[in-house]
Amino acid sequence: MDDAEVEDYTERLQAKRTEKDDFFAEHPQSPVPPEHREDFEGLNYFPADPEYRVSATVEVHDDPDPVEMATSDGRTVRYERVATFAFELDGEPTRLHGYRQDAGADEPVFVPFRDKTTGQETYADGRYMELAVEGELEDGAEVTLDFNLAYSPFCAYSETFSCPLPPEENWLETTVEAGERTPEM
Image (cartoon, rainbow, N blue to C red; front, top):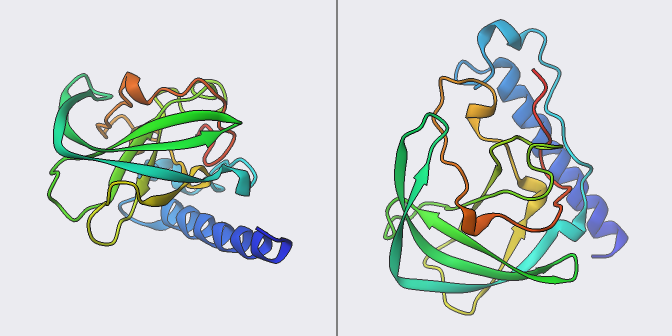
């Protein structure tokens, strides 16, 4: 990215963050408990960093394996591993798996993960990304994973939510200083 593209990307990312902050502060469906909304001053983010927008090669799983994910409230929820994304992060080859609850559904691909910031600078149970895909994922296609869009699940704000925990196969052995930091409540 050249300087103008970086500036444009940073402005668009900041606009998304402001929109999310407004939702969390004001919307009735905000995960922030009503008694904390008045004092809510916005989410805590790492600075935008285009280096954490990575190009990933897609490996589609035509016959997706079921994955039982533990949840924050002790239950399990079933997902299907629909794709694996191979990319380079911090100079190292890296892989993350993408899931859907219904492999045939036209819904975003769910990419939960943990990294070396988990429990230190980011939410203790991991973060999420979603990959919106137009049409079907194609084997060998290139997609962009943007860790600047990584977010804390709603259970980070209130125990009334049940959130899937990233399976061990999506625990990264690197530091991802992008996206949302630990919520301050």
